[in-house]
Image (cartoon, rainbow, N blue to C red; front, side, top):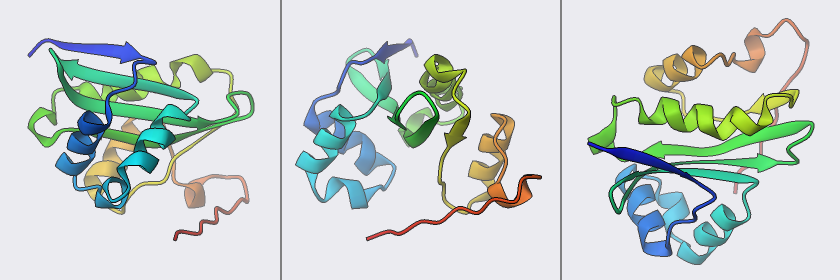
Length: 138
């Protein structure tokens, strides 16, 4: 497995749909044009490739100065546990080291909790700062 990483290289629509479908993110794949436009409008995109196959993607949104948000990070299941997610994570946040707020929302699954904790993130409710997070979906 010879994984290469590309910054700013936007995958084609079919490649995006294949990747998002592989991880079961059907809320994104229902509107392929919207997914493609959303990725293109991201502040920063890094992708992982096994030759010409897209196997992972991380994208950051925000202003890049005071806040960045890891919108998506996904790796094709056949490539899990190979360090690709960790590498995508590091590369996605690397340009934003001086940004004060780095955020993400994730599913309530132990594996994801462990991954994000290992990357230095803390759940908002566990911070010493009295802050709250609010979201609206739909």
